[in-house]
Amino acid sequence: MTVTNFDFNSPPAEASLGAVVGVRGSEARVGLPAPALSDLLRATVGTFLAIAAGPHRLVGVVTEVDGNAGGNPRFGAIARVDLMGEIKQEDGGERFVRGVSAYPAIGDSARIIGADELRLIYRTSGARTIDVGALHHDETIHATVDVDNLLAKHFAILGSTGVGKSSGVAVLINAILDARPDLRVFLLDGHNEYGRCFGSRANVVSAGQLKLPFWLFNFEEFVDALYYGRPPVEEEIEILAEQIPIAKGLYQSQRGQNERVSLRRIDPRNAGFTVDTPAPYTMQDLVALIDERMGRLENRASRMRHHHLLSRIDGLRNDLRYAFMFENANVGGDTMGEILTFLFRLEPNGQSMTVLQLAGLPVEVVDAVVSLLSRLAFDFGMWSDGALPMLFVCEEAHRYASVDHSVGFAPTRRALLRIAKEGRKYGVCLGLVTQRPAELDPTVISQCSTLFAMRMVNDRDQALLRSAVTDAAANLVAFVPSLGTREVVGFGEGFPLPTRLSFKSLSADRIPHSETFRADGVANELSDSQSFVRQVVERWRGATGAKLVVKDEHLAEAVAEPRPAGAAAPAAPAVGASTVSSRIEQIRAQLLRR
Picture 1 (cartoon, helix red, strand yellow):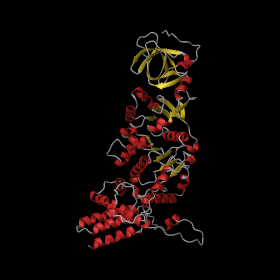
Picture 2 (spheres, helix red, strand yellow):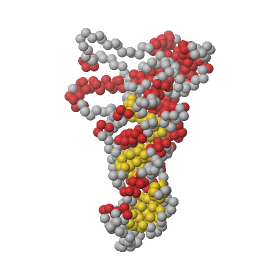
Picture 3 (cartoon, one colour):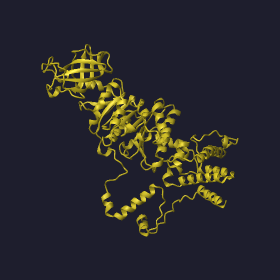
Picture 4 (spheres, one colour):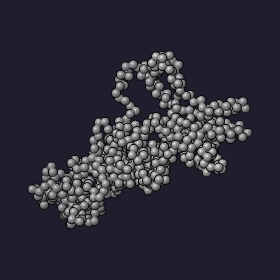
């Protein structure tokens, strides 16, 4: 084998390695020596090559190397190179641009790209960039992302469980917050693992701190909560659809009289509210209206449908797990402004991020809550004309926007899809995170112009990724199954060209870790098995909404908190004997008498 045009005294960046032996579309075939001439001149899969095409310097990546040189005596191997862009001379300097304006010819020389050229490629001129890690090809070079393109055109982080996906999310969001202090970030934390990742810049909201009054939910969301995620009863939701707008009008009428804002009495039935208007009303008014409607009926079956509906409302309202919806349900109060300010960090000089921990919420209502929050984020951006840009990050995105439309909650999918399609017009950016890309609605992911692909071994996941990237970068999907932990192949608008990189390492106190599981201290708890089991039972019952009734004398001693001698006994907790509950009991008694 004879190899020509090699200058072994030149630095590796300038040493010619081979020559073009074929061109087809955006792909070139380059003849290479085999074996490699030295460790510094090894060209294998993933290597960047520079090809001298006349006055143009083209940049490509090796996607395949074949030992069969087709009988060419000059070379021992043939490499397939995907052409990604070129380095141009402009205004006395050099600049990298995506795409090629000229194609190589047979015999054009090719060489391994140098470190200075890599820095030039990733030093995007005039762009606001963030540093998220290091290049796989040269760890001394920072891997940067164009933050404005990343946000304006949405992004997704895809990867199997255990590949460092959560750490990558933390690295990326911290870098975004550094570059865009004006941005508000809202993160849906499905496993309560991001609470410590952002330090003092994030407001961490647990399920116990969340307040989302029932009237803020639209009709579909409220019905989903009322029936615990099961199919509703058609006759009952027709009653609700008729009475909820009247309850809203009644509250507004009473509020107007109390505040003396109008001398003309407003008719609640003609107040202009719909079932989806985010206007307050009280549960007491809704129950009274349903009761009044029931009293006008003669048919026993119709009365029983009303009674069943009232029983559902009473059961939901007194379910301790749903206290975040029904606190002050009979008091009223228009708190929408305060809720938006708290959730989306609208204070001018406060924390700019919210981490909402969903793991403590009832499983049956999580979909409705995510739907509500997605709607609020979009609608606030729309009605504020994008005055405060926001990044909405959705973990476990495949759960809320499944490719199978028979799975999940349709309003949640629609809310996320609305952000994906129209959010950029109103300054609402979307970040999706999933370990099951094949189960994610392809319409949603197609709106994400920047993809961070971590290790995925499932063929269906890889097929979806291949369909989501451009033809020129599709061959790089073959690298995805062999990526290491924290390694990423980045595609799309946020990168100057498809890039293999490693996310930054996080300090031990910032690594995502689920707060729903405590490994420390379990051994000590198990030493007293009876006490440990009692604690588990208490948490179990609390999670299913049961009110604690202590009948066992020993259990009572274990549960009771020690109280200093002479201290007053604590006030008895509320047991749900509200006006609504009392009224429903009266209605039940009347029905039994009939």
